[in-house]
Picture 1: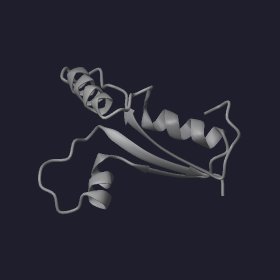
Picture 2: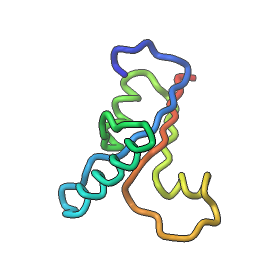
Picture 3: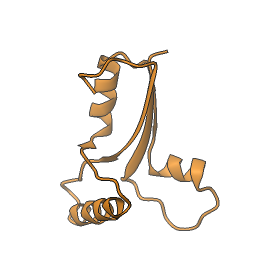
Picture 4: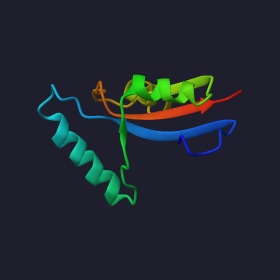
Length: 97
């Protein structure tokens, strides 16, 4: 993103980096990457939320909306059963206005 001109808004999705304290985190990440790849997408990188927000702010984005697993479920999948993981995919919207 650092080499791109700043647009009024940018939207993308990403996953968080693996948690080194969680033994099963790598296998869960690998399973998710395989599932996403089977749908025609590939993970190109992983981000830590705080680092990503700091970088977006440094690049001039003033408003950052970051939906983690719980907020994604609440907004897009309300009423579905099951548990919500603490870590996982995010949908991020960052604007300069």
